[in-house]
Image 1 (tube, rainbow, N blue to C red):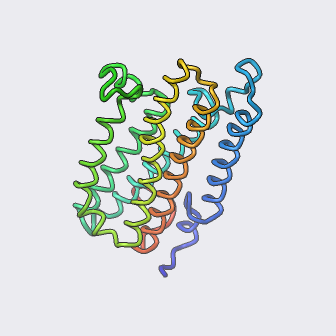
Image 2 (cartoon, one colour):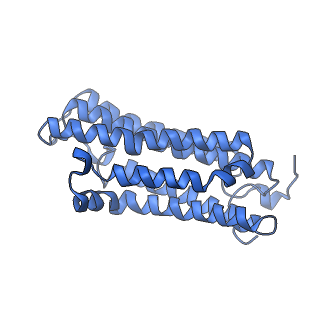
Length: 231
């Protein structure tokens, strides 16, 4: 195991306590939303800041932050890999850009704009999931050499993380859209609320697992733990 100077070991996300804090925040914020739905609070009584489906909520803020954080760590990893493999470094940077885009989408809702543009493609309420799924399949094919290069254990962790994230972002979203339509657009309908919480929970868990995998890769590659761009 590489030994780093003390100032490097103290970098951001350099130990398990940082990930513990992230996991705890995810669980607490998700639990708050589940609790409100479990006791069936009305729209007036609900604390919307604790609702995972609200754009202005603590969970949405958390999702934006964790996605941006993962993007930053991917960029940091890519910058440190240039001296070893320019191709791998560029793929880390590309993944970083994807995570930054996902972070922006949490607040700006690009996918909802896209869904409105393409209408009811495939008969789905949230039709954006169809082009998104195609894009994900293309991305997976493009990243096959990258996944082989980073090692089977880390690659498996990242694929599992991506599977969990996409099952929420695309799978639960598609099902939730149909349930929402069946309930005349009632966003507080119990079946829809259950799916929304599962969807957002899966997305958050997927990102956290991906971050774990990335930290493991950096350890196996002998990179300094924590984010320390250009150092």
